[in-house]
Amino acid sequence: MLGLVVLSLALITGYFRESSGGTVHNLQSTGTKVLHPFQVAADQVALPFRDLADWASSLSSARNENRALRTQVDDLRRQLVINQTAAQENTRLRGLLAYVDGPSFPAGYRSVAVTVIARAPSEFDQRITISAGSDSGLRLHDPVVTEEGLVGQVTKVAATAAQVTLVTDGTFAVSVLDLASSATGIVRHGRAGSDTLVLDRVTKDQVVTPGDPVVTAGWRYGNLASLFPRGIPFGTVSSVGQIDTDLYKQIQVQPLVDVSALHSVIVLVKKSVSESATGAAQGAGG
Image (cartoon, rainbow, N blue to C red):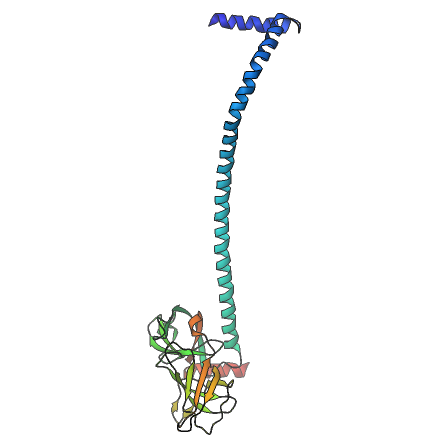
């Protein structure tokens, strides 16, 4: 080993001391020429392996980048859904607020805005659950509306939740008024699975035309009054028929509210005497 080291040092020293045409330089040049074909062959053999290694490294990097991009896209999609949902909810709440603050909001009532937490289980059981109950002042038979019109009425009340029977339920009925002709009748559910309701008890002498707007009648007789205040939009007359042998017209009404797509609603809670007096005093003061 020591001899090889000494020989190497001697060759290096001789290489730097001699001229370019010296013996050591000639030996290096000859060795380079002899080994060059082997170097070229070795490079040719190694090239596919280097290319394969480069391809594998690039593929791994591309996969990692693709995975990161997919994660980013998924995050952006989730955020987009959240933003769209928030925007839609904001639009719905603005519509409800505009109705509460508008001139068509029934006098003598206060509003309780709630969220629908359970939809109607089937076309034969048209009842929903809302996110407020007796703790918020809700009571049986309170009307439930949106800014578009009547939704139904409260039929069960718990402390923090309540059940609402929709206008499309078979047990629901409400007295209504045709705004175009002042004809009155009772809207009932038609057939199961249909959104179209039947306007019953309209005598033949009353005029009702398709397209007429229908609102709650809000009748009062002595100390008795209807459950719903007058003037809540309900629907539009979709068809009118008449058979000579029948006592009443055959009328169908299309409700204004799509009860299958409810998210937020308003419960109309009748004000107490003290609340009504306070409201009147504030109005007079304003």
